[in-house]
Image 1 (tube, rainbow, N blue to C red):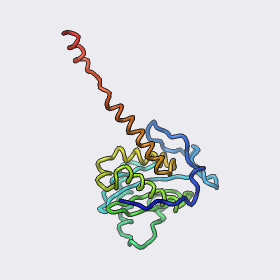
Image 2: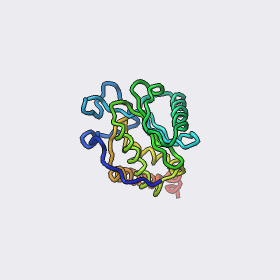
Image 3: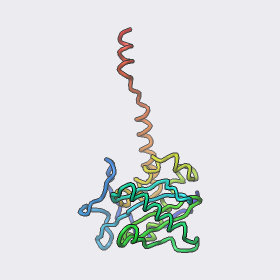
Image 4: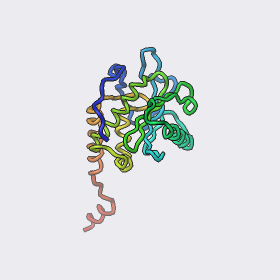
Length: 211
């Protein structure tokens, strides 16, 4: 799934990037927390990231507001219903207030057998969000050498690692594919080192001591 080299963002995210990354579990941004601020001082927020195939099966879905699993599944089905009924030659942008609440927008791109979807609020720049999808796909291409649907299915944990380096808690953290890859590779090395540590069971240790 090759993509062309992306251009610069319509808005510079360099000054907006969150420098501190929360690693201790999923973070849900509260209404009083300081997030990534736009020119107007409004907290910029991504509501959901989804990947689904052309049959409507979700391959990855992450919601940055708490929603029951049943509601998440309902939203995924509704989004697919909307996307699958749209002609190829129409805009990639949608207002989707009826599903995600007031001032909600959706942008998507269709690559091969997959839809890549971002849902965000009105304070986000639509073209920047479209470019962010391309950053994600470009990074996945580097991870899996021309990513396909099966790569996503069988590398679920790595997919979340990549996504968390780009968006965390509904905020854009990084937009440079090379920097994202460096972080993902460092995490992979730590995981490999952790898995290589062998712990001797007490029963084996006791057996050796009794010989």
